[in-house]
Length: 199
Image (cartoon, rainbow, N blue to C red; front, side):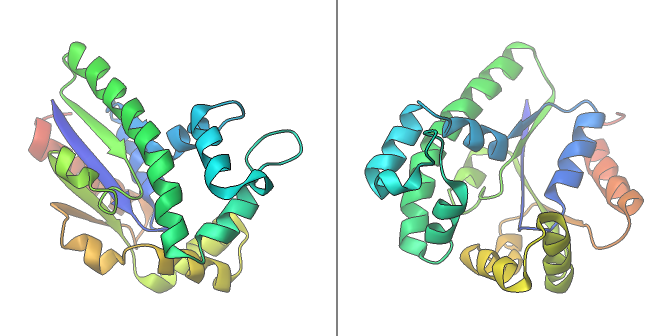
């Protein structure tokens, strides 16, 4: 089974590529979805986060106060790394379960959709690293439009992440998502042909 690791920065269009891969019949593990599930009320992961941040990180109903946490982590790299480590351990356990299940099905290829694939060292655990890339100005515009965020807020998030230029050094495949969606799909299809033949 070929394991593809997909990464990219905020607003680069990673979700576009991931969704298209699903349409091609490639099983996808969504690390973002897994990380959201990992911090649900009552979870062991959330307990660890409360131990780290204190009770202020919780909403009155016991759920994680995401805006509060985001404000803390996106302005302090040391805090961000500690928070990511707590969540990533749980997410990687889920990813391993996903991979085991797909291997048992004799699946030909799977996709791990992981925003921090390189930062957390998971690029060493996959067969091929794919990077979705756009120019920075497009990245900012798309993230502002998608999240209803200010340019300042988007830049703060971008600045906490490894740059796309640095990520490209680790990439086996670079998908240019600065054009229209059909162009992006054509690049993905071509790469999957190389890996699997006709799809």
